[in-house]
Length: 224
Image (cartoon, rainbow, N blue to C red; front, side):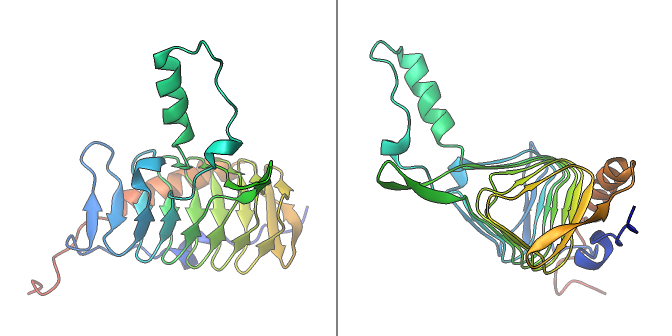
């Protein structure tokens, strides 16, 4: 087995107290969201709870599947079924618990032409996912306990399984499937080795520790 590359976490996401005037913490779910990030179509975005979204992150929840690309309901569909279908179609970006979006990263639904219409498709991100600063993500699915480095490009409709590390400056090809327990790097990214069997347990603990330590500090201008 190839040597396991060093974790991206320490280098990508230093833990500093934040200015409470620059982050919003949601009451029920405990998400900590920078006032300097750009979340578009917030009603189409789900955050699982205790997520951290840093400055200048862009999340494009406004890019939805074209109505003509959605399968039609049966003619005898009940009003409740119609409401449920409409609600389901609005979920564009789903991000799981204890996920961390590094400064300046971009989360954008993948797109393609379907039945003559240009359409976007939902993106689902699991729990305990770290996306490094400056990375661009257009995957279809990112599993849980995934560590994505700085300045990484994840191509359209890529599928990343649970327990994966993508190294800094990597470019993952569109449609690429990344299996669990592997390390990928390079441009184009290739499998470089395997992760230790306890990677997911350690990675989950790291994301929880990051959230616990990323706490409000004194407001700017109030330090003694």
